[in-house]
Image (cartoon, rainbow, N blue to C red; front, side, top):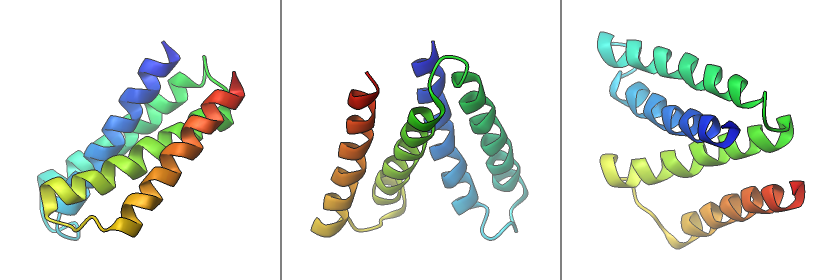
Length: 105
């Protein structure tokens, strides 16, 4: 249950970033509202996942999902470039997240 909540929190975090990008510096109402609501929902889901998972692990995985997901969303939805060095950094984030999960056992 904790992992499902944490995955949902990470996905909602990605949606929050996309909504804030579309809010155009808070000048568009609905993307701004969706961004704030998504942020609150993501934090709520993270907090619920902490009933089942250790804090350090959950927070690292949550930020990892958000970081990698937002970079990929930027590439796929907003035309941002994905260079070799950026891919290497994504791989480091994924490796660190997997490593923390593996070590937590």
